[in-house]
Each structure stands twice: as C-alpha cells, then as structure tokens.
Image 1 (cartoon, rainbow, N blue to C red):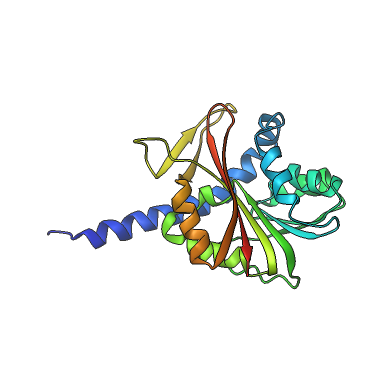
Image 2: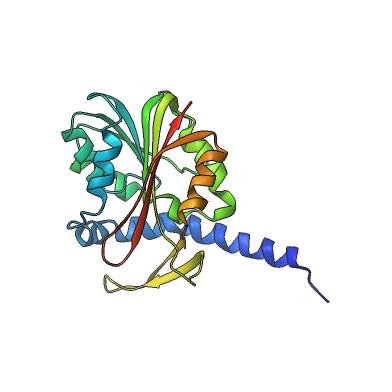
Length: 223
C-alpha cells in the first residue's frame, strides 16, 4: 500500500503532540535540577530590561511559561505586578517560593487560558521554542488574548542555526538521567511574520548570544 504525503504529515503532527504533552512530565521531573543549572544565566537581562522600559512602574505583566520564577522575581523587584503561568506543577511550586509577591497558576498555553484579568504586558521568554510551528499562531492567539489594547508582548526563541533543523527532538542526560524535549528554531523574519499575523506591531527586535545559542527577542504592540 502506498501512503501519500498527508499521512506522514499527520504522523509527524501526532508525534509532536505526544512529545509536547510529555514535556509537562519532563519539566516536573527536572524542575529542581533545571533551576540549579540555569542560575547563572544572564543573556535575558538586557532584553527584559528593554521590554520593561515600555511600561510605567506597577504595570501588570503575565509571565507565560514562568518556570521556577526567576524572571517573575526580577520583574517584581523592578516594581511590576506579576502573574505567572506554567504547565508544570513542580515549576509553579518553585515559582511561588522564588517570588511570593507574584500570583501563579498551572495553565497549558496550547489551550485557552481563561484568565479573568487583562494585562498591560505578556512576557513569553523561551516558551514558544517548545511549540510545533504548525501550532504557533494558535498558541500566540491564546497567550495574547488577555493583553490590553496598546499593551506589549515579548517573545524570546532560539535562532535556527545555518543548515540546521527547524524542529527536532533532543535527548539529554545532563542531570544523570535521560529525558527528551521537543524544540522549534526560528529566524528573525519568520518570528516577525508570526507576530504580525496576530496583528501586533513589531516595535523592538534583537538577537543576543549566550555563547551556545543565539536568542531572538522581539516586542510587539497590540493596536
């Protein structure tokens, strides 16, 4: 029996779905180890400060995929009202300890967030890189739905290496045990296209490096 291309596309999408869903159990498993491993990261500070410069102190910001709460804590210290969401219960537990002044909830960004509050800003750092590209627009719509008019959305993703894959499954064993994660990689113009597709105006763009990875950072304004 011959199978046309649509079968393989459907099969690939199914595998992506399984792996993305499995990310939740992966991050629940590695939460504390992952926190310790990333304590020294600094690449995100400049872009985050640039993003915060768009707001008055006290503005409300939704930290999407907040992880263990490092960025939430940073923004709270800068004088902002922070709500954080993540699909990992273990990460949310750590975030509540790290940034007790914030408000934290378990939410899956691949589903409507159903939040009762609108926010001045939505911050999504190193989050979309775990979403298959055929679902990016839908996820962007979910996470920017609670963004106020004239509010600002921030995203940071990994830049695709020249000649590299745009999506892959990475097997890792950094912490003495095996785990897998799904990654999407982007080009700047590609990410801008997605941002514009959800009708946000790009007001800032930058690419920075942490020595191993080039990070694309972009801010869009909701008109």
